Amino acid sequence: MSEFILAFYKRGANTIMKMYFHYVNTAVKPWFEAKIDIDVAKYILEQLGISYNVVDKHNWIIINGNDDSIRRFIIYVAVRRYVDKHLLKTLLDIVKALSLTESLFWYSQLIYAYDGGGLKSTAKVAKAFKVLYEL
Image 1 (tube, rainbow, N blue to C red):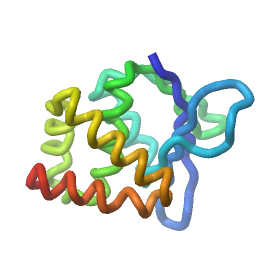
Image 2 (cartoon, rainbow, N blue to C red):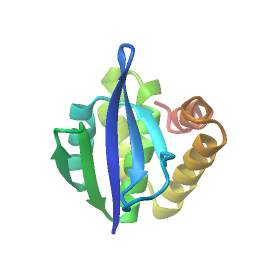
Image 3 (cartoon, helix red, strand yellow):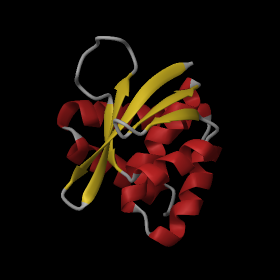
């Protein structure tokens, strides 16, 4: 089981979610980042079976889930930005149906891209996912 904090910030017209490991007194650098509203994030967490607690005071969500579910959440939030609205349900179905090998591959590519250049660097990986799965 992994535990993360999802922190939501307004940046202009967008809401940015930053994902942190939930350890006391640990590093400040986020594990991952995506543009997604808090309500959409809660819906996706529910759809993927990830339990969560909302901390309204800080605009945080503390999530608890198995590693595979967390990987699928990261894949979904990274790719959804580049998918047409009418295909978001299809994207969720595809992410749920990914094999363990596929989810590990896409997750590792997204984390590697984010670590190398932040949110903008994940775009190529997300768009490759979109093209491969014909979204």
